Image 1 (cartoon, helix red, strand yellow):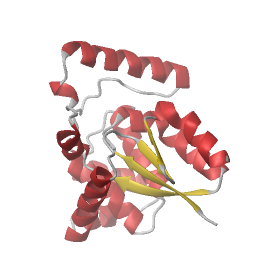
Image 2: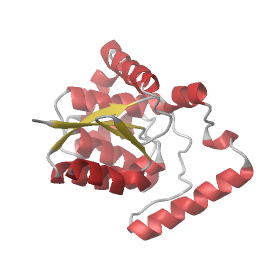
Image 3: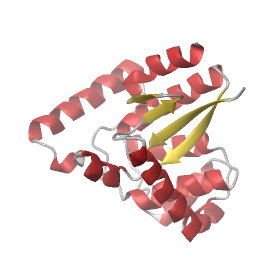
Image 4: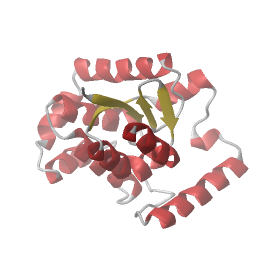
Amino acid sequence: MSTFVDYYYSHSSPWTYLGHARFLAIAAKYGATVNFKPASFGTIFAQSGGLPVTKRAPQRQAYRLMELRRWRDFLGIELNPEPKFFPVADVPVQQFGIAGGEMGYDMGKLSGALLRAVWAEDRNVADDDTLAAIGDEQGMDGAAILTRSKEPEIAARYEANTQEAMSRNVFGAPTYAFEDEFFWGQDRLDFVERKLAR
C-alpha cells in the first residue's frame, strides 16, 4: 500500500528551504509519495491569525533572523537571512512550481532550485526571465513552464491548494500532513520520520 505525505509549502519560506532536501530524503527513505501543494500563505495567515514578516513586532522579527542563522549554521546550509528580493511576490513562483509538476517534471527538484534562488542566490523569482532560466538550469523547458504557469488551470490549482490547506487547519509553512497528523515546521522532521518508520 502506498504512503502519501501532503506537503503544504511556500517558495518564499526560509523554513521550507531549510527543510526541503531533508524532507524529500526522509520521504524517499520510507518509500513515501509526496503530494506537492504550494499554497498562498498570505491568504492562510489572514484567515488563521498570522502576520507577514514585515508586520510582526520588532522583537519577533529580530528573533526570526537569529533562528535562521542558528539553523543555517547547524545544518550547514547556505542561506542569506535577509535576501535582496524579500518579501517575495508569491504568485509567479508558486504557479511556476505547480506548472512544472503538472507538466511531469520533478517538482521536488524544481522547488529546491526555486527555494535556493531566493534564499541562497539572491535571485528575483518574481521575474519571468529568472524563472525560465531556473527551469532551464534544471534540465527542464523553462519557457514552456512559464507559459503554462500563467494559464487559468494553474491559478485554479494554486487556489485549490490554498483552500484545501485552510480547510485542514494548516496555518504555517512548511506543513507535512500524514494520515491523521500534521507536522508544522522543518524542526519537526524528526517526528515526520518517526511516523513514517512505524
